Length: 110
Image 1 (cartoon, rainbow, N blue to C red):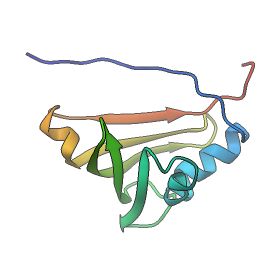
Image 2: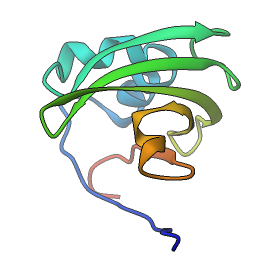
Image 3: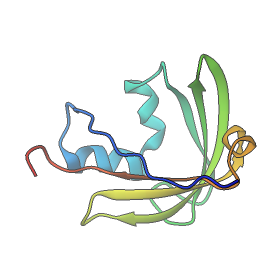
């Protein structure tokens, strides 16, 4: 059995779309400053912050349990304010064969 799908949600931010996109791409290690209960830390494993092909390690909490995810930055699109990560190692791959995360930040009212 295979599961394929897309999940979308709206989240209000106290930053502009461009500012949040900049944090996601170039400074994801700052995400834990605003969401410590969910994202405990992000470290650069390989490459450079804000560059496609770079690899980051995310320490996060899911269902009250500490988890780890190693992700490759697949695509950064500054025009669409989006970034796509491909999970290459970690706890989530115990549940799914493959996993991609795309975050697109849009200004309110568009």
